[in-house]
Amino acid sequence: MLNRLLMVKAWLLLIVLAKALSMNSAASAQIIQTNPQQTESFQERMRQQQEQRNQQTQQQFKETWLRQNLQDPRLQQQQIIQQQDFTRQQQELIRQQQLRLQQEETRLQQQEFTQQQQLRIQQQQLRQYQQIRQQQDFRLQEQRLQQQFRQQKNKL
Image 1 (cartoon, rainbow, N blue to C red):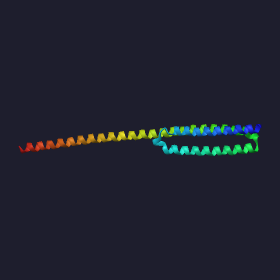
Image 2 (cartoon, one colour):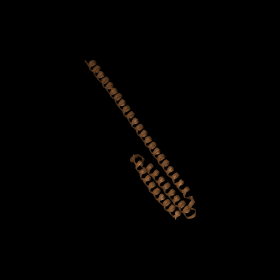
Image 3 (cartoon, one colour):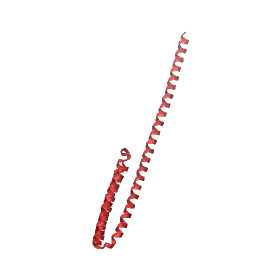
């Protein structure tokens, strides 16, 4: 009777853990979508990798649970410890994923800032070039006028 109660509790714990993992995946997906235009493919790869890890781990937990409960009910405590370790690892993976996304977003922002600076520099160089060109045109026009004036003066 006690073994059956422990098996039911362990199974319920496994179900709760699976639900928590799926909720964590949904939360991670929402976090990932902070900048969908620039990091979509990066986010998709991260999400797929996270889902694969979750599926593999859930499968391992199912196999372990079946093995432990069908072969040796005394190993249930070890399973609980493993589940707690898994939860900690999942939280750490999520934290690392968030950090990578923040780093990627920062890199993209820096890249955009650099591009804007380069554009400003190019625009400033263009304005300078146009000013120089205008000055040269003005001088050339002034020289032509002086030459015409001299020619008219010489004709007189």
